[in-house]
Length: 478
Image (cartoon, rainbow, N blue to C red; front, side, top):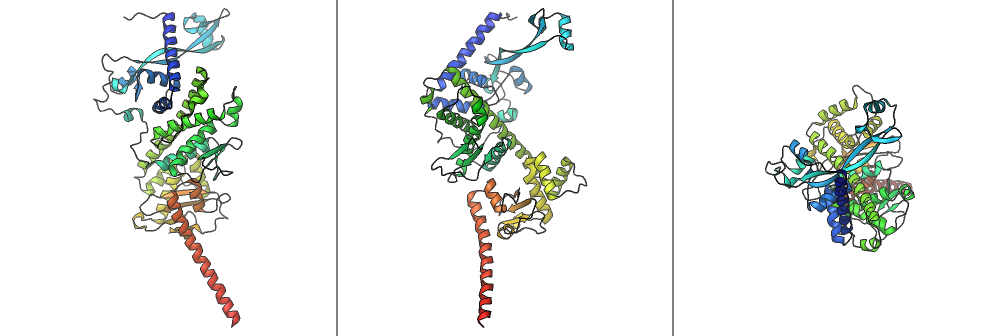
């Protein structure tokens, strides 16, 4: 039987581990390469506390996934014989009770005191302590030999190369901004030159440079959302020592790097080279706090994005249903049996309960109501829900007068592409093309093509109008 450690031995071990973590933090700031390596690691371990992520990295470089001994057993895997555990901090809350004017651990208190605490007669309080626990990395187990994949266990979102999920991630970031009441402006308030984007703290708003590529828009939006999360007016007011402009930029760039790298987006253009300038005279606690905020923000963003993508994955599976089956299932989930609701009420009800299902709902509704045959579509068509028309050529449908509508819901079908649906308030948006542009639902070349279809309709209408005027003038001359 292993000998029990004394309190002094436990404290010495915790102190040594803390010192090891401090040295590891200091090492990150020696060069841009080291901070990049650390940020890449943080992305993989964003669900751990920053301190534990650092300890795992320092003891087991290149770790992919870790778990405790019992955790691996539950997965059907066994830790290999002779493997040494990775030390981590384990929270250990201890309850204290007031006994004879002293706070004593409840576990060691007499039974009457324990009963008094349970009944609420005797004051108690919790104190958080830490002890050392051990975890084991995936490669320290026989999981590989048994065909157990990391993604099967941890349900993590892994990209397989390519940027096929670009639009989904863009949408996830839009919902992230919306959840934090961050306004996404259509364009910067002033010319920002070569800057990729900007955050306006006084407006709690973000604008992206319209000259950005679609990929730049995503990575820059993450950077600006980090500013909105970490450097808004409320957070700035709470800080004892205000952050300098370089510190804010460095934090935002680190968050963008962690999230972008984890999602598989290019990270070659990230600027982490100026860290030496402001870290020169910084204390370890300042560095730790900076990294702590970066870690928390990155973790929050990645959790939100991965949750969004997981819901989309579920929806993709649901797409195997016919439109009729899908709408019947949604009606049951919404409790709409025999409900007489307007289009406005239905869309807003789905938006408030299952926002990620608004577009699939409108897609299914349009396909069902028009008996759409996608394989026969050879030009962009659009269906305006509730208007009484079927799918019309995009330019014609976009040219309807929407000013009297309470809500406009539309579905666009493009040759050889999935359906695209959206909805908007006519008081804030002019027409579906305007909404597609604002919401970034389609790529810029497709948007330009749709705009040309609409312009052709406008031009034809103008030609007809001119022809009638010319005829009247001729009649007057006669």
